[in-house]
Every structure is written in C-alpha cells, then in structure tokens.
Image (cartoon, rainbow over all chains, first blue to last red; front, side, top):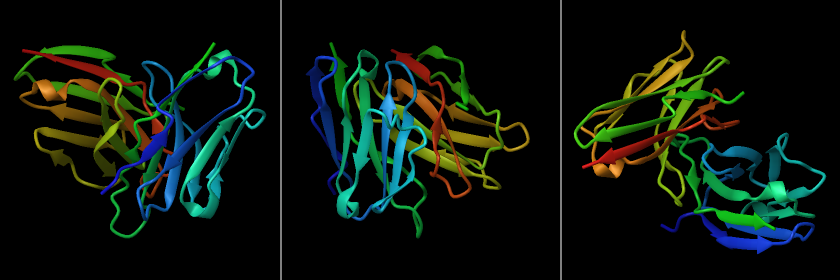
Length: 116
Length: 111
C-alpha cells in the first residue's frame, strides 16, 4: 500500500516569493492534515480536512497561507508571499476516522522549505 | 496548549530502560505516541483512550492517568533502533481530531 506522498521534498525560495506543496493521502483516508514542524519541535496543526471540508483551520495564517482539497483526495498548501519565518518542514498526514480505525495518523516525509 | 514532555533528552546504553512523560494542562481524552527519526516522518506507536487500558507495542508500552492528565511511555531493554525523538499528542474524544503534539523527547541509544 502506498503511503502519503508529498512534493516537493525540498524547496528554496527568496522571501516574498510564492510556494506550493502537494499531498496525496493514502487511498480511502477521509481525513487529511497539514502540519508545520520547526527544527527540534513537535508538529503544529495548520489545517484539518474531513473529505473536502476544512473542519479546523484556526491555526492557519490566512493572510498568506491557503489550502484546498479538491474532490476530497489530493491537497495543496500555498504560501504567498513567503516570509523568512516560514522556513520549516511542512508535513501532510492522513487518517481514516471512524469504523475500525484506531486513530493512527500516517505522515508523509514532508516538504522542507527554506526562505532566503 | 502544547503538552509538556520530560525529559527533553536522554542517552541510554542498549538494554537499559527509559520512561518518557507527557503532561497536559487540559483534560485528556486521548493520547497518541509517535517516534520520529532524524529527517523522517513521525511514525505511530500507539493511542490510549480515556477509560482504556495500558497498551503495549513490542517492548514499548504506555499508560494513561486521567486524573493527573498525564501519560507515560515505557521503553524496556532499549534497542539501537529505538533512537529518535518521541512525541506525545493529545487529542479529542474520538482520538485524532485536534491532535496537539508535545515538546518532544530526544532518545539516543548507544551500544
């Protein structure tokens, strides 16, 4: 079974440039998460989707960050314009909520963003 | 609020035991434990739900103290492969909604 796929793995941009990250969750998983992880710290939730609906985006800085999950499958996270403080690893995770699920989140390998 | 983990870092020799603690300032409904190796994705270890029993996973087990709003992860007879950063995550009633990760504990196992 394929895991959560993210791209790009690495991205270096100059400040004020836009950037986008893509995530393909595990097939059949109805819930998708975007997390931000700074070096040496735990992941911080940016947004959580249940199918196509963003059910928790309270931590998403909406002035520069946006996300979408079209057709309830793939998702894209965009930053425009990027700031120096946005340098971090952006993790995507998916899970199957309900049924026999034990609540496990499956993470992708992340997209490491460096803003110069 | 972010759960607080202790210790922040620990170094053990192979075969020794370790305990990692996770404390929350809010009522706990569920606790997840994940391990992340350097440069890799976090990997699920286990989830404990309010009212549930202590769980085990190979030589790794965990407990959930609702009254103290704490969870502890126990690693017995540690192996080199146990090295990594361990994160607890506190969730909602159903498990993984609004999952908030802790500050992390870096575990290094040396031969």
